[in-house]
Every structure is written in structure tokens, then in C-alpha cells.
Length: 119
Image 1 (tube, rainbow, N blue to C red):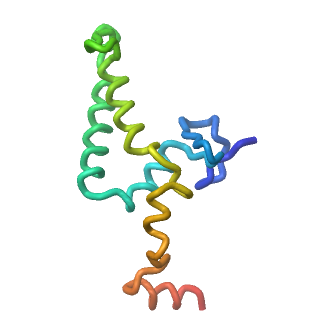
Image 2: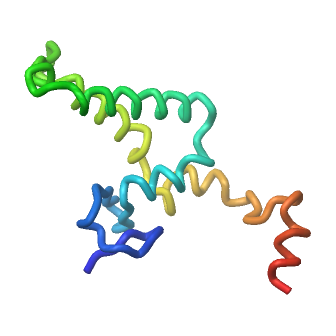
């Protein structure tokens, strides 16, 4: 009965993150919502890591058995780095949300367009 905070679809149908505050997000929903608040460097790094993960997912099982000195596979290392970027804090109540508390929901350049839609 748990659903994603963004799309309200059952969590268990796709990979998801659950935070200590009890907010829950599908991985893809979290990435889509988090994207605009990431800086350019983090966005680029995240895109690079996602490309690496796709490549690693397409490799044969024999290749995936190779491990690094810490005993983690390359795939696990990439996933861990993605987690560090994406899941370091809750989208709704983490530090990033608090830092952006004074940012308007509607930007000045969107105001006229939004007002016309609401009428």
C-alpha cells in the first residue's frame, strides 16, 4: 500500500528509495524531481554515472564478476556513487529544500503564462 510521493503509484513495481523521514520515491521519479536542483557539475557527474551503469549492465556475467580491491564490483561502486548523489537527503525535507525555501514556486518569466492558464 506504500506509494511514491511523486506519482502515487505503488512502490514495489519499480526500484525506489525510502528515507528516514518516511518519504518514499521511485528512483526515476526522484531523479526527475531532483534534476533541476542539482548544480551543473553534479548533473554531469550523475549523467556520466548513469551511462557507466548502463554499460556495466550490458556486459556479460563474467565481466561483472571482476572486483576491485575493496571486494566491490565496478557496478556496485557506480551504484554507490549514484546513491551518494541522489539519496544523500530527502527531496522534500532535506537540506536542499531548506536552502531553497525562499525560491518562488513560479518564476517571474512564467507568471503571465501561469495566470492565463488559471483563468
